[in-house]
Length: 252
Image 1: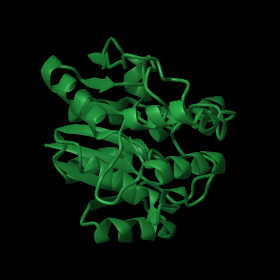
Image 2 (image 1 turned 45 degrees about the vertical axis):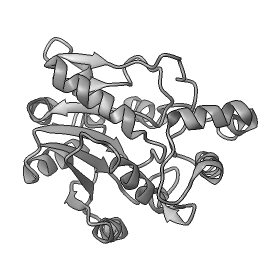
Image 3 (image 1 turned 30 degrees about the vertical axis):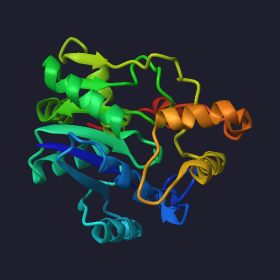
Image 4 (image 1 turned 180 degrees about the vertical axis):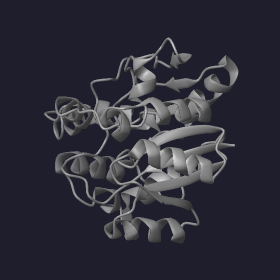
């Protein structure tokens, strides 16, 4: 079974409660789930959140949308993924983060298809970035997840789930998908207020009830309105992971 596991929490340090911030009258997580439902190769969606009581609104939203959930370790997200994968008998995991409200189901399907056809352990579009930040997709086997769960010892490896796989290309068969045009300088994820403002403006232009828009639609919009790119251009990409490396420590 191919399961998309979405990691979501309320206690984001830079923008608390961001996963439930409204975009066009719906919570950001609602939009992410709605977009994941359009992916043809995903069998199930699971929201994996932390055990703190402040995450209960996330569980409530998932229940309202008839989406399965898992509650696990707050900081050890790798353990949370592993336990969720066991609970729902996942053979293949698609990792999605809840700060990506423009995630594209077509790109997800491309990554899954490559994984299935190529006998890989792990497929992503984020090794050599050619897609906008915020369209990141990771597809990996339960076996690779289990090895990571057993072997990963650094805090950054436990918090960000897949770094152990990245660091060990000799142990895993890895593949990267690339876009025809390098769009890696574009930032479409939500970590700060400016990011949220940018995404709200994109949705204001493109959102239609009962439909979703895709990467190409956003690219065309930005070509017509280049001023939109200035809203969050000053924010560094992957800042959270970089900070976790700066304060990294052995935890196991």
